[in-house]
Image 1 (cartoon, helix red, strand yellow):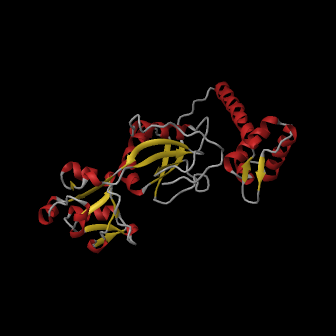
Image 2 (cartoon, rainbow, N blue to C red):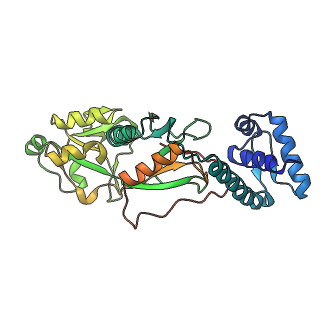
Image 3 (tube, one colour):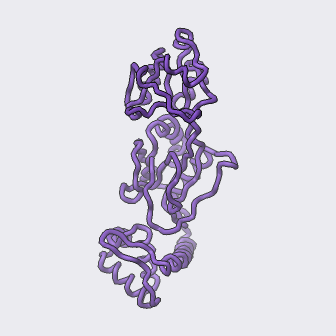
Length: 314
């Protein structure tokens, strides 16, 4: 029995959740992957995986054995790298998913310096607010806004995702400055179509604000709402990433700051790998350095409880 090859097959199945995907990584057939697992289970005298028609799950014995497998495979990789003397420069294509607004306003401009520093690296930046699966959708990393439902992904904290509520100086001079959330009932509020259905603006007061009767302009695009606010059309509630520069320049004036929604956590997520590829590692290092968080925000990387990837998000 080729123990090392069997370990590689077992770790690949645990990582990808199926024999077929493990076979693609190892460049063998799914049948051969199954044989490797069977040989390993016979050798150990214990079942390592619980199988169904769609996915594989680790047994208790499998979870315990996987940790040892990873250590062995890591040592083999390190030994091979030291013999070859390879410290590869980041190169190739890195696929990243990010939220539309933060990705276009913050991440995309920042990536210019990374691309200049790494001339062999290419980045495909997919901007969408949909939830992505890192494995099924083929992403190396994603930016997720909101709480993390799983510890099975590595998560590095980024500065929280904050919102701003503001209007142009001309609008506030014409209509007055709201002092309480209830004042919004007599103001023109620029509505996002994603908030249709009575959701309203849920400010820190805890009560949703009924802005819909005064939403004389609605759009499915935050940039369009920003432009309308700059032109004096009304009050806009959008991410600070979109509005921050206008507020700093005085083109927009922040209001009701004491009632703004609580900033949501934001993380860079990627699949666990004790020896990440250079292109992923340089991207992680770049984001952590470029967007530092305060010590109280940092909670460390999550340790994978199993190698199956849960759904990431953008």
